[in-house]
Length: 275
Length: 275
Image (cartoon, rainbow over all chains, first blue to last red; front, side, top):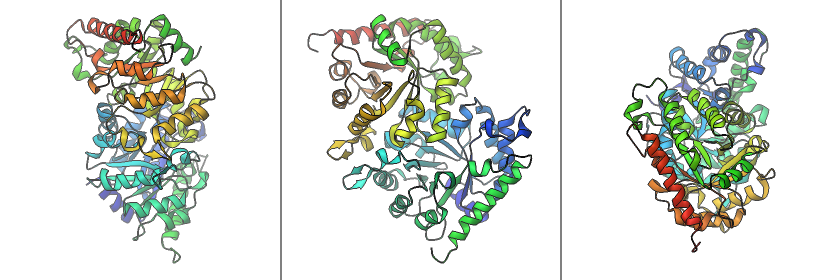
């Protein structure tokens, strides 16, 4: 099995395109965890168990663990997901990017230390910076293309020979970097037109789509512009709207409901005759 | 004091533009550390003490610590440098880049957890992704401009309205991102022409220059194209050629000699009448 085949299988098995982002912020944890000896792991584990049936992937954001010196909790969390929910891919959202021997060490960090199934990378340093990841054919390499933030336009929309930079990035990755068929792209929900342009350029390549909900991205637009002909091809990511859906003792239940609702909302659009 | 003023002071006090990169790889450690209980810290500490008099900065590369699950050693190492060698800035080479709340957590990682004086960032996500770092006016924000690897050309040399992308990056950072005067750029020694173009665009902004030695960059070319009028403006980075200069029990002494030699080689070019 590989990241891509696992993802395709779980899209079908869970009938879901929802990727649950894990961004632990202790200041937002429910009061019930206030005196817990291992709050980051406990919180994330409860969210994972409550949302797994509705998810096609989990995406821990490593900055949120690193700022807390909680690398150990992240290691245990990913091991727990693999054990308790086998077949759901874990994407380490790290946006790494470095050269040669250093890139090789980042690949060890993501794939060997953390046992992630996929990792997000920044393409600015060029193909050789991605090579130590690309050559791990069973792992997913998810490259930033058009991000969800307002500042995305600063560089990503610059005109490069009649084509914006993000489209150039999409093209070279699809045409040259994807020899092992293990690439995917990050394209923010807040830029649906650009999402559609990327889909046209990359065929059925999976797209990781952050930015729905709080950032303003619209599910209907994401499905309309980003889904493949068979209604898949997407990992639509939501973090805070799910994991902080509830503040009470039943916070995990609330997260499970939020994930189920968002999955249903996505599926309603997938099945819409207007699509 | 700030990163920039500390750097200017140490350029003068140590008469050095040499930045010592700390990339610990246990497989390359001298045999004398084979049974050491804390080898990563011990190795780096010995290198730091032996090279400090010749350095204008230290640059630990976080991937090399993360791949070893050695974050704790990195924390202690940076604290040690501040304590034993005050005034020598520590650059956390992390090449982070993410949006909004996540960028803020990476800033906490670099500046609060690790107590770095500066951090390297990737500009692909645009200005708002750098904002949580830029607003820390006492800290240095060192953005990738033209990296030292062969693949740098894949994106960084693309023509954007008559100007390569890396020059556009240099311009917007100098003109718009540098409101607190705390920005610097990464420009690889392997591309001396591009280094000169960047120097022309950014005035006296400091440039972090990797790629001399093993990667093929030439010290004379770096000084000729990159130094400011007063013969400073550069952090010329060398890692492996210094820290693995010796394999015996005197490895630290060998590293100190290699650093001293490289500093002298750089200074010979700074003082060359041909410059």
